[in-house]
Image 1 (cartoon, rainbow, N blue to C red):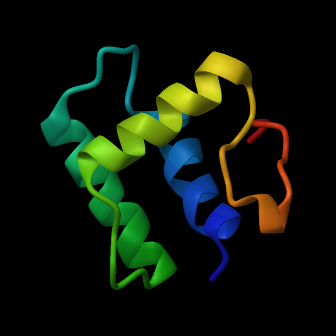
Image 2 (cartoon, rainbow, N blue to C red):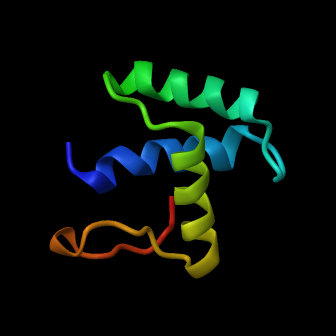
Image 3 (cartoon, rainbow, N blue to C red):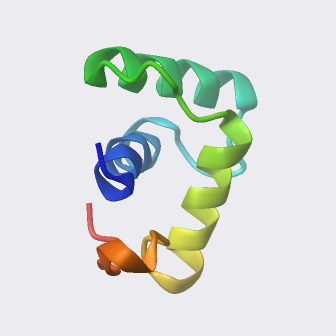
Length: 76
Protein backbone atom coordinates (compact mmCIF):
# COMPACT_ATOMS: atom_id res chain seq x y z
CA UNK A 1 0.00 0.00 0.00
CA UNK A 2 1.51 3.33 -0.95
CA UNK A 3 1.67 6.25 1.45
CA UNK A 4 -1.18 8.21 -0.13
CA UNK A 5 -3.54 5.25 -0.07
CA UNK A 6 -2.72 4.74 3.60
CA UNK A 7 -3.24 8.36 4.67
CA UNK A 8 -6.37 9.25 2.74
CA UNK A 9 -8.89 7.01 4.56
CA UNK A 10 -7.66 8.17 7.97
CA UNK A 11 -7.89 11.85 7.00
CA UNK A 12 -11.29 11.35 5.41
CA UNK A 13 -12.60 9.65 8.55
CA UNK A 14 -11.28 12.42 10.80
CA UNK A 15 -12.89 15.12 8.65
CA UNK A 16 -16.22 13.31 8.68
CA UNK A 17 -16.43 11.78 12.16
CA UNK A 18 -14.12 13.54 14.61
CA UNK A 19 -16.06 16.76 14.98
CA UNK A 20 -14.47 20.17 15.41
CA UNK A 21 -10.79 20.52 16.43
CA UNK A 22 -9.21 20.21 18.89
CA UNK A 23 -9.84 16.48 18.63
CA UNK A 24 -10.09 14.14 21.57
CA UNK A 25 -7.24 11.61 21.53
CA UNK A 26 -9.67 8.90 22.64
CA UNK A 27 -12.05 9.67 19.78
CA UNK A 28 -9.19 9.76 17.27
CA UNK A 29 -7.78 6.47 18.56
CA UNK A 30 -11.18 4.84 18.03
CA UNK A 31 -11.51 6.28 14.51
CA UNK A 32 -7.97 5.17 13.64
CA UNK A 33 -8.69 1.68 14.93
CA UNK A 34 -11.94 1.40 12.95
CA UNK A 35 -10.31 2.62 9.72
CA UNK A 36 -7.40 0.24 10.26
CA UNK A 37 -9.77 -2.69 10.71
CA UNK A 38 -11.73 -1.80 7.58
CA UNK A 39 -8.53 -1.40 5.54
CA UNK A 40 -6.82 -4.45 6.99
CA UNK A 41 -3.96 -2.18 8.09
CA UNK A 42 -1.81 -4.22 10.45
CA UNK A 43 0.33 -1.19 11.32
CA UNK A 44 -2.13 1.57 12.12
CA UNK A 45 -0.61 5.01 12.57
CA UNK A 46 -0.50 6.59 16.01
CA UNK A 47 -2.84 9.37 17.07
CA UNK A 48 0.05 11.86 16.94
CA UNK A 49 0.96 10.76 13.40
CA UNK A 50 -2.59 11.18 12.14
CA UNK A 51 -2.85 14.57 13.86
CA UNK A 52 0.35 15.61 12.07
CA UNK A 53 -1.02 14.43 8.71
CA UNK A 54 -4.23 16.39 9.37
CA UNK A 55 -2.37 19.56 10.37
CA UNK A 56 -0.11 19.35 7.31
CA UNK A 57 -3.10 18.84 5.06
CA UNK A 58 -5.01 21.75 6.60
CA UNK A 59 -2.07 24.15 6.61
CA UNK A 60 -1.28 23.96 2.92
CA UNK A 61 -4.15 21.91 1.47
CA UNK A 62 -1.71 19.29 0.22
CA UNK A 63 -1.11 15.81 1.45
CA UNK A 64 2.50 15.48 2.39
CA UNK A 65 3.69 12.30 0.76
CA UNK A 66 7.03 11.11 -0.54
CA UNK A 67 8.22 13.04 -3.60
CA UNK A 68 8.62 9.77 -5.47
CA UNK A 69 4.82 9.44 -5.42
CA UNK A 70 4.07 13.07 -6.27
CA UNK A 71 1.82 15.46 -4.35
CA UNK A 72 -1.94 15.46 -4.57
CA UNK A 73 -4.43 18.08 -3.45
CA UNK A 74 -6.09 17.41 -0.11
CA UNK A 75 -9.59 16.93 -1.40
CA UNK A 76 -11.22 13.89 0.13
